[in-house]
Length: 501
Ligand code: SF4
Image (cartoon, rainbow, N blue to C red):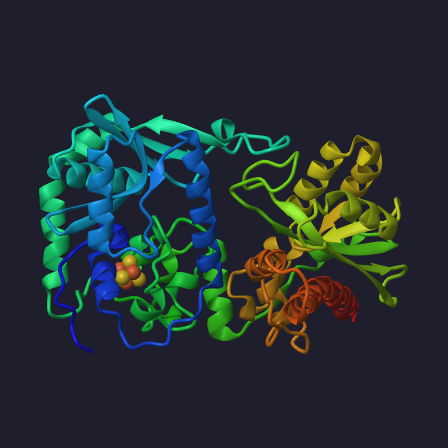
């Protein structure tokens, strides 16, 4: 691999460098490594672009300096031209100073000065946003512009959509001028440091640390963390231990961990894995099973969320259900009848979903979920939205029980669970013949991405394939619950017989 000789900086490079110098260097000099695809990252990027374009309506009548189709010098020249022509508002205005290239989402003329309005699709101002606007301020000032005020424009998640999107309510604009000014003094030093990093011949050897996921999940985790084994200190569950402090002390594998530094659950996790030990607390398990009754419906939802509310009566980032799977059993161990719903793209799915759900779950049925807070939240939102269905939906909410409980309490623990009580860890430990392996859609994020992709298609084979994959995934979630419950019932009977024998 030839090292890049350019020491120019751009927005993405600056953000990378502020998070970790090694990430900056690696972005410019990517290693020859098979990085896994990141469809969710691409979807997030598209959503960010959509949010940025919508925010332009806060200052209508501006002129855009596009990135696509124009070289960097052409973008700089076009920006200068618009400034000289007296344009009051410029979108994506482009500047370069000291070999740092920045684009400003919305630049607004303010007398002889200018206002910076930087748009983010988050719901609050973060330090990294302030750092980036501070760089913009530094560059624009270096180009001879006077900056009067700086703003961070972000999503206001209290906004409730009714009809057309109201951009004044969807966005919240927060003035950050003082915080940006306070960062100006250290700016030349920061920029020099970033540039020095780029000039280094070899990859910086910064250690991995909490910054690998803060403020963003770093793209280079698969590369920098490749020496971390499958089971390591980073799998320890719960709080109260500084994993990176252990790492810095050279402790990585379970058999190196000083057990007296762990809490009770962490110690159980480590000892169980090292000794391949399983455990069952029969009375806790029996208490849980005694709370269930039949008919019993295993229920799972898939939801999506978006910064721009897609339908009336939705808020930014609200979890909107688009799919459910239900396996209904009349008696313990009985045949499980399957019901499913998957919304057509582009329509508000909630009314039809709620009606079909009520038809599939009898009012007196026990409703079993995995992590009940999520399903309760979704059903509560539906009850608030449809007053005529509220009483029926509330009855289902009251009947919810949580299959995660015996695992969270560790009434049933298998060493393969390695401290986790996620269904993705519990299923292979309890029911090894059933697996998500090989499924095209194999987790909730992938399901959300598949639904978003479905919504970008009209008809055709790809859409049908996505539908099939989504139905298979959600069905698998509730089938997994059926099999896990059966295994719990079998375990309880076995333990009880052993105790009596
Ligand atoms: S994975 Fe961590 S150490 Fe590696 S570049 Fe990213 S932030 Fe830096």
